[in-house]
Image (cartoon, rainbow, N blue to C red; front, side, top):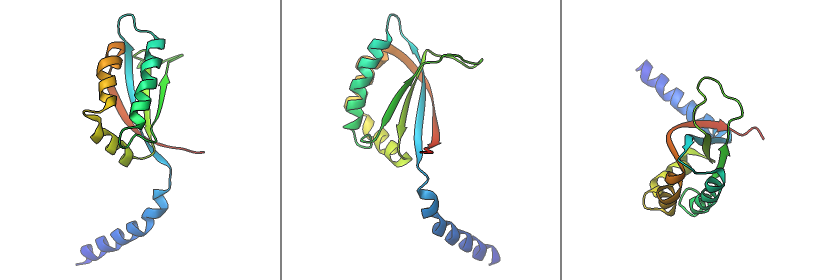
Length: 133
């Protein structure tokens, strides 16, 4: 019974503290490691990415998406790929809505018709980030 009472007390304290931690401005970030295909150029990438962002912002969960393309200047031993394609969502909830709506969307069509011809972005990682601003 003591364990149950303690568990209940801890749960209640966590529920009470949740609003304090909910306003931390944590964002959901996915970083894709990409390599250009054949004769693709950065200009091709920028053109396709502009269309991708417009389509993403019209997709459920993507209204507040932010996208960045990062080119390495200096890298360590794990520095692979030609660039990073980075998507940032204000929350994991929005990222989840976007992923659920992705299949059959304009974003998927742009990925398959344009971005897949420009680069191979087969590896990615998901991060949690905080805005300090």
